Image (cartoon, rainbow, N blue to C red; front, side, top):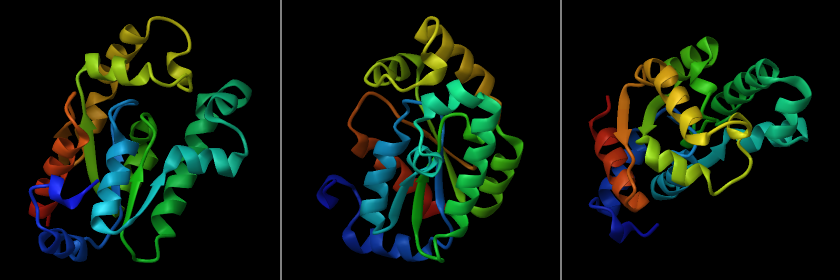
Length: 192
């Protein structure tokens, strides 16, 4: 992402990055753009970026669908919590942006850890956007069976009260990610 696409100058972004003293953790539904936005945000802030799902797969030496199939969702969520805790602790005080899986923030322990130790940002989208984006990949265990629209609608409503605990809430629509990045930068600039 080019700095010229943001409404913030390189100096403003650098000053903002210096103020961030904890991990930035993106939470929200699958397909909302946590990884895409996270990579661009990390690049702008000159931070490391980590996708928690990628780290889980690397640690387990299995794909997430394989973990779900072999061990179930409860096992996966426990491993997810441990990986996120490690990522947040291992950043060495430097800036890091972490994209979590869609269900990570639902786990009470994971949510408490993230809320306590990170700048937590809920990226939110309407169901139509989620359906369109999740259809691009075939690695979503929770969408494997049934109607994806119905599943996403149900998950979104069930998870909303958990996501709403994040102090920063950003709507991510159909437009280019730079619009979402600008909203995130604006919220981060006001974060204390």
